[in-house]
Image (cartoon, rainbow, N blue to C red; front, side, top):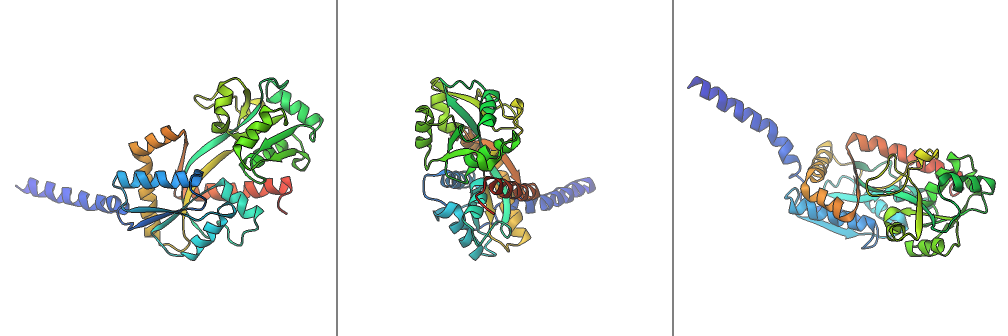
Length: 321
């Protein structure tokens, strides 16, 4: 009988210890997720995927997503600052926002927000037309170093991830980034048309933008900005070709400034649970997103490193002082 009582007490003690961890993800009431961009884009898709998984897996209910477009996410960022202390609000963001803060001379930056987690990412590929004389990065770099202004690269908007990658590559191979010939386009379709039409020597974008043309044999992927070879992508890394650069167009999530330690822990617990769920793994596979999950203090440190690196390359390119 005495032994049974001890077992009951031990069981109750363990239950009480486990209860706070279990309750953390349930403490968030009426969660709202801001997508600081128009509906349909990457941040919007990420926000709505988080919403679906959190709700369907019973981690947090209800969850609302709303859009605040404009200025590379910095309009939404300003609104996040105005929601100081709100423990039921998250905002999706990423590398693009770090660049936009610099190039738009935003009055608010990421110094005051509460970092929660890095979620997903997409590595960039460098492509050339199938008929190009450049068979690999060594060929492309040799021509580029011989005449930096003559070898044009197409990509997305000035200061964006594509532009940053070309700047990092230039610096890595000893070319002054200010002398590189980067041709920005507002959409992936225009970039694709430029490289297929031989208007530029090469183009840079996320692998998904070029996948169909690479598989059809119309484009050749000469490099990918991943730290190691990626399954299902037939492209050698830049690093393996002596261009010591890796870069992911990552997406993450942050909370307003001034939330309590308990509120931050509850949000991170919810995201950790989401990341571990089968529903999230299925979402990553369906959308072909690379899992780059990093939460809590690790994401805090990563964010600071990315801000420093982004500021440096945008200065090298000449887009910020």
